[in-house]
Amino acid sequence: MTTADVRVPAADARALADVRTCAEDVLYLLGAHGVEVLFLNPGTDSAPIQEAAATLAGRGVPLPRVVGCSFEAVALAAAHGYWQATGRPQAVWVHVDAGTQNLGAMVHNVLRDRAGVVVLAGRTPYGEAADDPGGRDTAIHWAQDVPDQAGIVRGYAKWTAELVRPEDAPRVVGRAVQVAGGGIPGLAYLTISRDVLMEPAAPPGRRRLDGWARPHPPALAPAAVREIADLVAGASRPVLVTTRIGRRPGGAAAVARFVEVAAVPVVGRPEALNVPSDHPLARTRPEDAALLLEQADVVVVVEADVPWIPRGTRLAPGARVVHIDPDPLHASMPLWTYPVDVSATADGDVALAQLADALEERRPESGAAWEERRARLALAGAARRGATPGATAGTAGGEGTRRLRPAEVLAVLAEVLGPEDIVVEEAVTNVGNVAVHLPRSLPGTLASAGGPGLGWALGASVGIRMARPDRRVVAVVGDGSFMFAVPTAALCLAAEAEAPFVTVILDNDGYRASRMPVFSLFPEGRSAAAGEAIGTRFRRPPDFAAVAEACGALGRTVEDETGLRKALEDAFDAVAGGRSAVVDARIERG
Image (cartoon, rainbow, N blue to C red; front, side, top):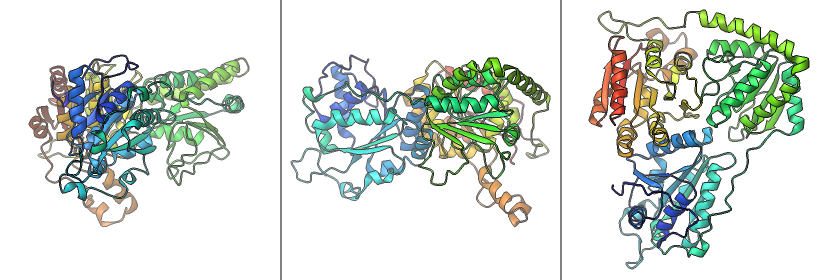
């Protein structure tokens, strides 16, 4: 065992630990507050933390597992994935301002997904004298001294602070973990200079570990329950829109009970397993969702930041919109202006459980109408399931061969997957295909970034696998998002953490998501006429399978149906043997 991967069995967090420096205190306190993993990207400022990890392990003092990461964005994605799998905040160490900047778009994902993460960032030492322990001793310590390091993330962080006195470490670390995981979870950003980390630890009498309670989730007020239940009970065509409620342990069950009581169909981009794909009231096809929304007289939006795209979906005149969310005003989105008639602050799973109870009481007078609606939805669902799945016509792949369609790749993957395997989705323009052709039935078996930052899935897969070592994890990504994910760093982290996973690349030779708007906005333009948009095609892409092999993972490239299943089976065999695997499926270009 090395200092890059230190793990000590947990002990009673209330015991007074044998800690002697501020750095040791910080590590001990993180573990005592439930942080299980510190994803560490080291620099000149992290030396006290690295030494503290080795020292505490030698003394048998409990601390988080410390895993070395070669790139900061991958580390944050891993911590984010771990949060999704457990609901417990993990920690990331980054190197001053430059390391903070390298967190990149993963910070945006944490904000939008409301993920609890603690980011610890070094900052340039204060001391300059020769006898200042941990003081400045290299030119970079002046170059990296910036006026507002926390300002790099301030617009995305829930909380920022600096630890300036070792005696405050118990208060500051306890507060960081409490804020990251409590209420509406988010990013807690804490800076610490290395000279402070080298000072003596706070006296044991100051090490308070109790009294850091996190708020219970908010529930609907009784009046709101009555008003919303009345609307749903009296509606002819109600619909539920949700995207992330399945993140919580009871979220999928709450959705299922609510929709089953009153026969309400469910739509929304599946950022989590909100309801089983084969549930009779689930509508996964975008065209089905749009039709239901346009016909609805009551739309119940629960934890869905973007419930529909107004440009393409218009609600029926007189439709009533109910919006339930822990932050229903979405103040961090300056122009969130969806029409809302009833707004309520509550966690979605709590609110839906309340509404299901209230609707159950109304069953005697409304049950017949609900059964009629259930029958109508069942007929529509049967017709939908009997229709031929939509697929774009094949595109020539060279020498007359047809390249794979996304639906074909996903259908074979669905046959290879087990019900408990976890799919980590970052398929971008193929997200609709994933929803339709890669069904999931068990809660917690689908994960996505919940935000706009590409490059999340690979690092997140490592974090999820670390949190769920008994589960197989497969990331489904586009070729663009694969490269955004810094695959060398992600595969290196998977090996270091002993958390192998499978990556399936839906490889269409470029940024289709950036090509489509050019054609849409300029349908008569030169780009549309040529079928190309500048900067969106990879003319000499890397050999992704070779990249995987260079990182010690299994790499396979598949260009047609022949060998696809074998490549996927080989990939899962590799994971069973402790290696990650990458299957590059060359799909139609689009």
